[in-house]
Image (tube, rainbow, N blue to C red; front, side):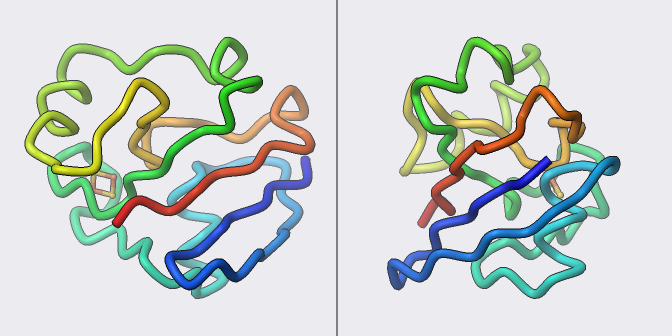
Length: 101
Ligand code: FES
């Protein structure tokens, strides 16, 4: 799937992947603003992204444990997800993710 990240400096980075999480893809490719400090176990929120609204139904809502972590973040909205909790599949092809502040 082709995945586009929009960074905090409005840079657009499009990557291609078939597996792994949205956090892993970003970290492996040095997308600024996605650090993945906890290694993907839903306890740091340094992988917070805003999903393009039209893809939210495909990506799905966060689980409760993820929601608890997101709510600690100032930049949270209804399109917020932790990148480590979203697995890449072909269904996500063409998605745009805005890196949270
Ligand atoms: Fe830590 Fe996603 S990498 S919450």
